[in-house]
Amino acid sequence: MEVSDAEFLAEYALACEAKRLNPQSMLLINEAALRTLIRVGKLKAMYRSTNPLDFSNGLSVLESLIHQYDMFLNGSVHLSEAEFAEQIVLDLGRSFVTWTRIPTVNGNYRLSFATRIIGYCFPLLPIFNFSRGVAARMHFQTRPQAALVHYFREMTNGLQVNQSALGTLTPPSEPVGMSVATWQGILAKGWWQRRVLDIALMLHFGATRSAVGAAQWVLSPSLNSPVAATGNAP
Image 1: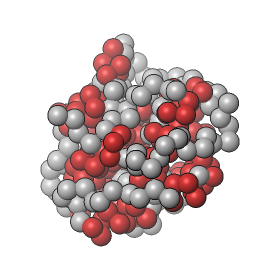
Image 2: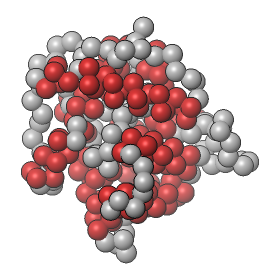
Image 3: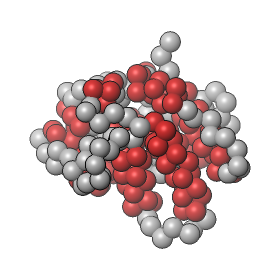
Image 4: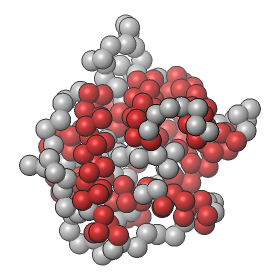
């Protein structure tokens, strides 16, 4: 059985919030959960990398990011939302690489994976699913870690350009297990609109459907054509 965006969101966001509120508790996200995300998100190509995935280190770093997120919410991290989002995506993307030598700026960071995890764990942050296919069509650098800041900025611009079109779509009901208040707060920060834009651009550019996942929960039946492309689209 496939897992929907709704189920991933409820599982990851609620687990991270529980850990944030009670730092001594166990994080209820494990390697099996991450492997499910890889399977559903069509990210299995990572398994074929010469640098294997380091799940243990990735989960350890995720726990540290939950603490950093708590500090950010409390005003102890002096970064904008966008800057903080970019920073923790890079940190998590780097952490999943099994390094055979000292990490370098040219390392093969797992940013497609990291953006999906962070997007589910911290849905109030301005996170977009990074797609190598979309990034290539938008003529960004081939190294994901070099392209990320430009990718996020262009996606943010696309969100603004398409605000009216996205506003006509009716979001789904709250995921099972998540309160209406929590879901309304997530919607108010644009999580669902970002997911719609992620998928619309994948379809617009004809990019690989990597990490689209259970798109039926995200795409409204009224979305009969891709949302307008962002400014740098060819």
